[in-house]
Image (cartoon, rainbow, N blue to C red; front, side, top):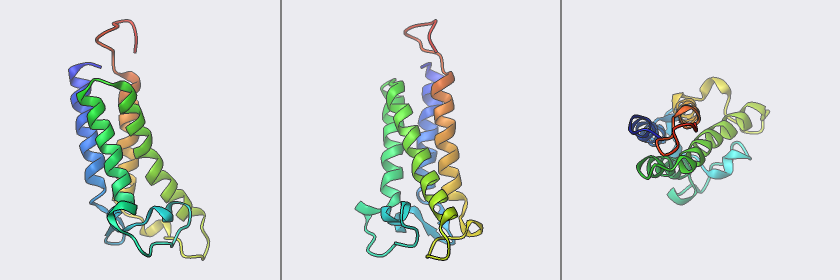
Length: 138
């Protein structure tokens, strides 16, 4: 990846990390949402830092940033996939949950959507960035 693409990937990784601190539902950020709520909407009791969605988003951001710093397209793609998958699964599981405690789509805030968009932009960047080691490869 070129230096510019690596810099943009680093900025996108930082944006993914910032989305963990933005509100995901009402005024609750990702650090107060349990990983269990990915597949069981409404199951949010007993959340600690080690079991929060915020930690998963931070891990995804660190993988993207390390991939950008080490010029590893593979790590950037893995981090991008993580940063798309976690909020997308959370949003979709709440969308298909009925009256069993899920969050209505109207209450999901910009933190969840921002994390998914930043991860998607990271994947697009990794796909279109030219490789400086092999000029004919994308």
